[in-house]
View 1: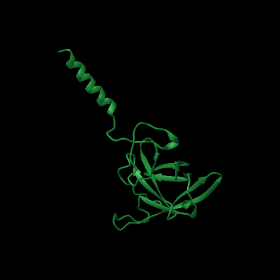
View 2: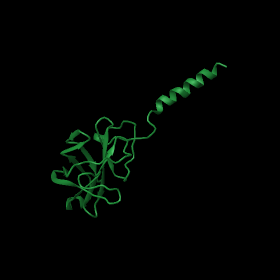
View 3: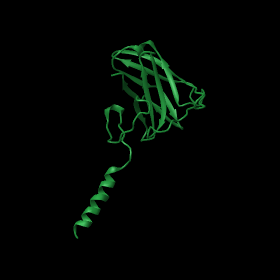
View 4: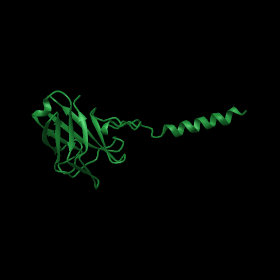
Length: 155
């Protein structure tokens, strides 16, 4: 009968190890936290803050477009932002190009310019193959400001 307390202890301990019920990967500077979130559009997530928010980048090389979606800390819910633009730059080797993400309205979701979770930048440089980085100048989400955040894309 001594085995029962050990089994109960093991079950309790495994529950502690499980932690959050969703997997999430941190892409910021290659750090992996062991906690993975899935990008809803199949793009690349950039975590912002201490598990506060994410932005997802979705590249369309054919269109020369890059979408940015504002998401919550678990990348499950879209967050509407009042921003009229989000300034950024692409960095490919020694070449730096300034881009601007414009708000995208949607009649399906009721999102409007100044109240949307989706932003889009267009550039012929986005049509090029190969890896590059995107660095956000400044994005503000629910009163928190994030400057100089960078993510690698286009592998």
